[in-house]
Image (cartoon, rainbow, N blue to C red; front, side):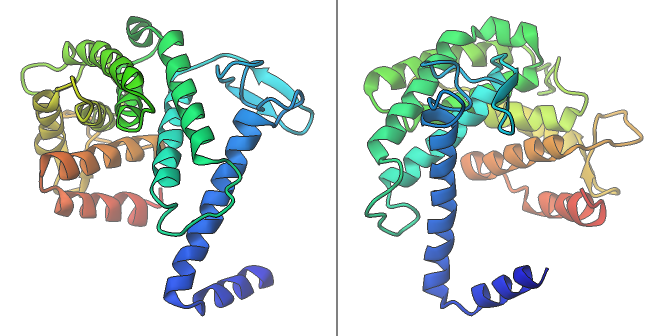
Length: 288
C-alpha cells in the first residue's frame, strides 16, 4: 500500500506533457508485451501462448503456471476481441503512438499489421456467419460484426478490405433479419439493452467499410435502445420492456456503452444525458 501511495504521489507531480507521454509509453509497451507473449514468442513452444501451432487460430484458455491448455476451442468472441485490439494497435503504431515517437518498438508497425491481417483472415476462414448465429446468439454476431468493421478500416491491403466487407455484409444480413418492425433485435442476450447496444454498434462500425451500409438498420436498433428501454425513473437501461427487475453484468454495461458511443459518434444521436444517468446509477450507485 505504501508503494502504491508513493507511486501515485510521484506520478501526480510529473509535468502534464511528460505525464501524458509516460502513460502512453507504459500502456503501449504493455500492449506490445502482450502481443509478443500471446501471438509471437510466448507459451511452451515459444510461438505464441494463445495460438494453435504455427497458425493464428486462438485457443480459449492457457495456464501459464504449468504451460497447459485447458481449453483449445476457438471461439468467435475471442477472435473478435483480439481483432479489435490488434486493429487499435495498428492505428496507434501507424499514427505516432499516441503522439510520441517510439524509436525502437518491441513490435514494429509492419509486424503489427501482418498480425492484424493474419488474425482477420483466420477469423473469416474459421467462422462461417451462419455458424456464428447457430452456435451462439445474435449478441455474439454483433460483437464479431463490430470487430470486423473496425478491422476493415485498418486492413493492410485493398484485398483484405474487400474481404472484410464481404464478411461483414454476410454477418450483417443475418443481423438485419432479426429486428422486428420497431428495431427490437430478436434472439439476443438475456439483457435486451445489451443486445441492442452491441448489434447497433456492430452495424455502424461495419458501415464504415466501403461496400457496407446498414446505418439505417443501426439507427432503428439504437433508437429502440434509447426510446423504449431507458427507464427514466430508475436512471438506467431496462433489461427488457416488461422487466420489473434489471440484472446488468459488466459485459451488458460494456455492450450498452459501445452502442451509445457509436450512436453519438456515427449517427449524431444525443444520448449524453441518458448515458450520464446510466453511468451514475449503474457504476457509481450500483457499484458495478
